[in-house]
Image 1: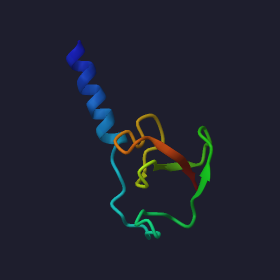
Image 2: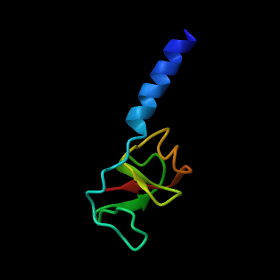
Image 3: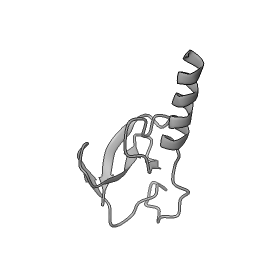
Length: 78
């Protein structure tokens, strides 16, 4: 049973922890941004991703977003 939970957890992280491939323009900090996105609050129905505390961008919109990048700095909405 523990092995099944571990496998499900790892699969969830593989999906949730994936990062964009850098197809968006970069700013001065060499992090990607989309001019149609703005900072918003957790729970906003328009969340499209997160800006991580290390400056990277994640397309994840829920638990586990930025887990390997120091956590979520703020959510991005469109």
